Image (cartoon, rainbow, N blue to C red; front, top):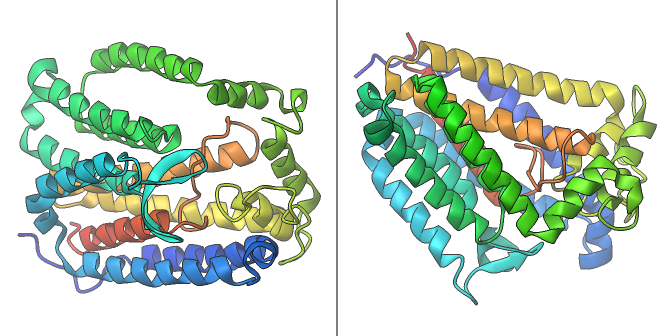
Length: 365
């Protein structure tokens, strides 16, 4: 077992804390009007977010104390449990439906989204499997076929909800992890062709996905329908200017931008805090990714390197997709902004993964 450092990566913890504080502040600012109207309580969403902040930090500190190599022994069990939850959530009357997706388990506002935790379970399992079978990673039959079969079974279960955004993040993270492990480029080219064909098929099979693509190309062709959300997002960002309208002074949160505390919270942040505020958040994410990458490079074993790579890759992919959607560079996907968007499952997962990174940082060479 590697020698343990006395303290984890302090800068990683600090930047995570800053992002969570900014996120909680913006959740309240973005949601207060809607919460007052719907629940007669402007703090409705903030109180729930803070509950999961506490839960998330408890999970983080547990992960810091439980050496990451111990999770390797539980990888199979954790993956099986997550697969079971993905099946259970699809049972009529058991899974909760929100936004057209049957993706939640729980009661009322307090619920979990199994697909979020499947992302971490898959990263953990792949880190274990590849570290134990790296000699086969350049082969198809013994290396890539078992791995991709498992990934696409999980993706299929997530798509039955349906939740293309979460499923796509999981697949892209796994592909990145396998690439870093040393898989052949030729295999990726072949799989890439299959993946593109499948992705096009998924889009063509659902009219609402086609609408999202067309609204991405030209949101003004249906400004009150499929293009409404992205137009309102841009209307929020543009007036923000350099310094913004001021914290709490957003106009778009007054029932123009739907559910501004979730996927489009960065638009409200840019409106209220301007270019300076948005840049500060991006710098915080850049520091977080830098520290995570450093931990992955200096991890004492292949398992730790792959585990850290998967975690930091997942965070980077979500940040790029979310902000890309908000500023109109990508079609609407329903991906949360890590540690800023409202959502218990997402926040708890992200803080748990940061805890794993902090733990690995205690062992780096």
